[in-house]
Amino acid sequence: MLFQEQEFKNKNYTSQPLTKGDYENCMFIECNFSNSDLSHLNFVECSFEDCDLTSANLNQTALKEVSFRNCKLLGLRFEHCNSFLMAVQFENCNLKLSSFYDLALKKTIFNNCDLQEADFTQADFTASSFNNCDLGLVVFAQTVLEKADLRTAYNYNIDPELNRIRKAIFSTSGLAGLLRRYDIDVE
Image (cartoon, rainbow, N blue to C red):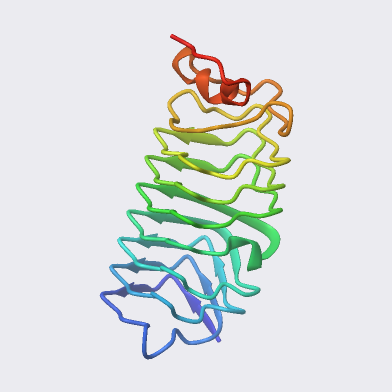
């Protein structure tokens, strides 16, 4: 089933799931998808605003040019999505405990997001922006951050020997997050 240019507002999909199909240029506003099954759905050029997608099932879900604004996205396993042409952006979102394991999400924009304890293992965030984002306890292991902008990101601990950070941009105040491995004090 194809849904185009529709607005879904104040819907609760926790007990009655979203109809399976393709959603193009649709807006989801103040909807509750907490613990719901979004598997095998296709979202193309859609936006989610003020929605709760906590622990939703994203198995083979397509997210192509999808934006999330003021959303609660706790514990989402983005690596379960269909990665073909996957492109997302986040603004004012809570992404605590979410996982982006092994995804190629080049040029992804994160604005004012809480990413505490997220998993970025083996993910490719080349040329991505982390504007005013809390990266406390984020797992960076074999993560590609080349040309990424982390000037206003904070609380990160990135080991330059375990991650690719060539040409990434950091602020001087954030250098301590690159040197924690060496147990030195930066003042």
